[in-house]
Length: 431
Image 1: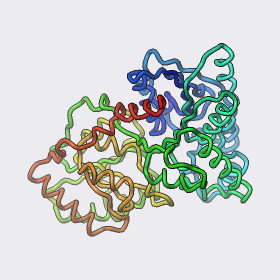
Image 2: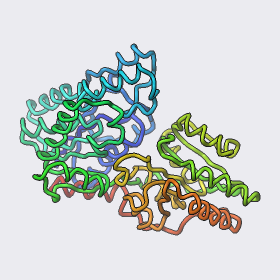
Image 3: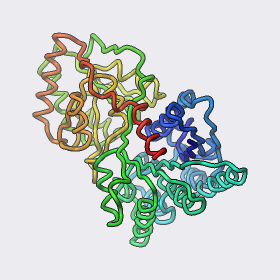
Image 4: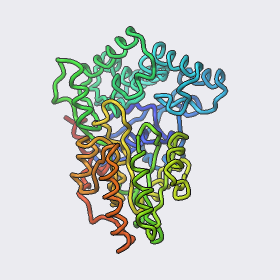
């Protein structure tokens, strides 16, 4: 079977978004699927973060076609004097300056569904060239965000009759930062219309969590539940070949990835400070690997944990995995935003593969909470559950005094390996 994969994020792009499609492409040939990838030329595209190490994951025989693009980020940098492009919800930008409020309004009302829509015409020309040369494909998979990529699938299905799988890693019109974009009624209507067209006309829709599936199913009365498939993110067994190495001189709680004050870990931090006070012989330490907002750093200092906290800037994915294996306990946080019951971060599966106790700060009963409890790896604690969090931290402190290795026994998580999940995708392609 021949599959056309269209994804904006691809090595050397870094971050969680690129992992899903990259791992699918890595394992698909093992299930009789030959993928051809169309992505943006990294010299012309705009990535929030880079991770050159991920290029080693691309199988040698996979063809990757890189195209030009037409995006506004070059102009944005010139007008603002910034070197880094804004994240989807402008999380790395000022929320109060008039300049940023203006750019958010332009983003929400001019570039619908998003500023990377200028890439679409370049992709469509590349696909037309392949078809004119006599190439055929059994299906096309479009991966988003950016959700404008799904509009490419819409055109390809109409123009060539290709069977279309829409892989939606995040919600669309319900994404947590949409209210930040100050959309007019017309912009909201048009964005919702695009979303509904994609959901109605795609042959299969892939989502990463059960709650996201429920969210999308409510978008149109004509949608059939049978074409929605929950294929979560996962972990790649080949990333976890090194042995676990928790420290013997510290109870080290590690978080990897981006985190800000939106995640509301104040009570967790307060509980950590109190646990350290009650157990002075237990050297409790925190480590944050990745982007940590200034607001959260201030909260850590206010809790009296500055000297107990280690900040590590963004690192390549393989090094991030090493930090997981060198931890005692892992911290995961779900942002306190709308529809967060369906947020199932890709990192949770790598956390599971590391076999460490996991503390999740987020909604109880969410998809993330259910997954952790299903795998007996931890649970979610409500944002304000100070007493319960403190009780668990004290339990960990007592266990650490008995043995500094808190690693869990073999967990029930093998069905979340990237290979097992790709086998499910291959089944949908051949259906």
